[in-house]
Amino acid sequence: MTTAAKPATRPACPHFSSGPTAKRPGFSLSQLETAALGRSHRSADAKAKLKEAIERTKTILGLPEGYRVAIVPASDTGAVEMCMWSMLGGRPADIFAWESFGKDWVTDAVDQLKLDDCEIHVGDYGVLPPFEKARDDADIVFTWNGTTSGVRVPNADWIKPNPDRVVICDATSAVFAQEIEWEKLDVITYSWQKVLGGEAAHGMLILSPNAVRRLETYVPDRPLPKLFRMTKGGKLNEALFEGATINTPSMMATEDYLKALDWCESTGGWRGLKARSDESLQILTDWEAKADWVEFLCADDEVRSNTGVTFRIADPRIAGLDEDDQRAFVKRMMKRLEAENACFDAAAYAKAPPGLRIWCGGTVEPSDVAKLTPWLDWAFAEEAALLETA
Image (cartoon, rainbow, N blue to C red; front, side):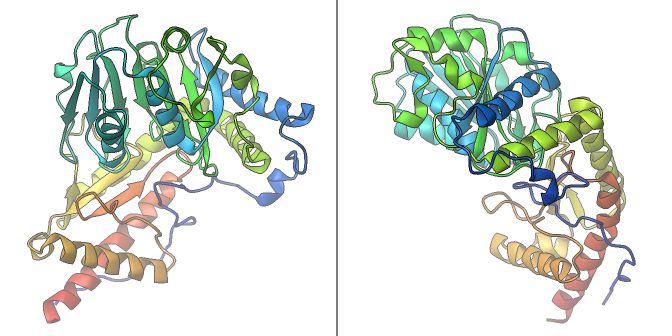
């Protein structure tokens, strides 16, 4: 029976959830005292804050000229679905998925929208689907980074320019952490609660001029609920992209997003946050090379995510168990780590292969990732020892 010495140092922030993610370093509720609380979101003060969130997003991300940004309901999910429902159906469509949320868009396209000419390309967890099968004339829906699989696209070279189609990209765990080829994309979505550690329920929608053209020229043969409507009288509702939201936003969450943008700028903008994520991934890469009980779920380091970093248990004593028993083992590891206040919420996503998922977005301190790895070794050794004696 082998056990490991309990580490002496804990991560200063033990929050490694992939969403909602860790708050930015230095966060305090006192920073939100300037929020427009108790005011109508249609008031001048509240609209000014919402518009500030939109304009600063454009600047910090370096969006191309003419791209519009809106704050929409229902987080990243709402942002993706309002565009799928509003834009798809008039042309062929290719849907690419390799993890849980990408498969949700497959379900939407096939079972809900029932698109006539729709080709589905699905990769297993840990690998990308065959992007070379993308049709040059088809609309495209895909995720840039697989939050639950730990795999990201390396680039958008596989997307051939075609002004007659739209490319819809769920980039919620990639924006502010990875290099996005904006010009290749017509719809980009994300939520505040991913890389910036904001609060849930708010989605960010980015539209290219081509996406606007699609909205103004295509009328889908399906009813659109109010939350999905982006046009009035056949024209884009420009007010949505100036801070007049479709439904009531949280002004406290908006203030938190603004403060997160302040922090982002202080760290060097999105490139600074990407560097933090890259540093954390390197720490985990060095650890994985030495740890004999764990391995990356994504074997290809060229497409490995630097935000949601996923692992499987490689030790044959655990890997030989059925999936339910493997999940139970990881759950016991997590319970042990939580009791020590060393790590929270780092088990793999429920529908993903059993293992670990460690969030390394920019709000996570790389130094905390370094302090985490000895605790993971300890928790595994403790639980594996108990398994041997059972």
